[in-house]
Length: 352
Image 1 (tube, rainbow, N blue to C red):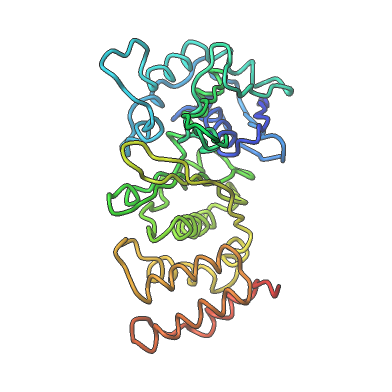
Image 2 (tube, rainbow, N blue to C red):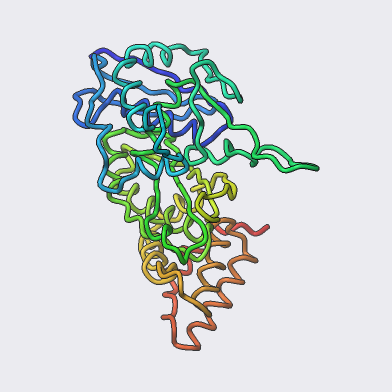
């Protein structure tokens, strides 16, 4: 069986780079191809390893609207006007991919290719903040004396195309965070340390995406718990070392950038491998991270403290969470921890 490699060299725009890796893999693999497509993160580069002959054309079904309307979420900051003379973004993505499929593959077979990202790129496309919040106007530039919108970043159309595909198919856009009474939204994508694409699609589709909306931290931690529990069952075919996230604040008609970053899954990956680890994560998922944004009082405080602990599992953070949890037990709002569950939770706590 033949094998070929393609290279997604990183630019420093972390979510954009990760989406390109997933998007390029799906462009090649399609929704029902016979090729075996894997993604490996080798630090400065994602390598797409394809076993089998590369398809001559991409699968047009990947450009159809998904059940979750994720294409609309990717391009939610695009302003559609009645006098618009250019194509809508989804039409643009589809035409670029289908008409330039071979050119995209040839470009990404090069080991030295790195996309140009600047305020003016020849035949460039706008890098939307939904694909990477670091590209948002005004987020990168300090404003003094007079207000201005800031300059918009562009990237070559081929890299823009595969990033949009990756965002639409593999970005996590929690629906319950779109409610009016939630003041922020997040986009999350698990970093593919080593994944078989077809299995990653299965994991992605099966991870339930109703997340705790109390804060961006609770939502990110909640997703990570669900992901790690699902990935455990497929650990021989998928391995995620962190999740990459973008946060946007809801202000008026257009969301504004709220920041972004990466959350290491080391602690959760270690915990889920222990005897009681999966049960501990199930309990946290079902009972300690509520999906109702109107939860107040001790349950809200516990969700926030627990998220702080799981983001940075120090003994001090655990003590803060546990003291709140004991108060919840006294008020008969929570059940006592089982001793074995607490022991597993404390196994990998940092004593710093």
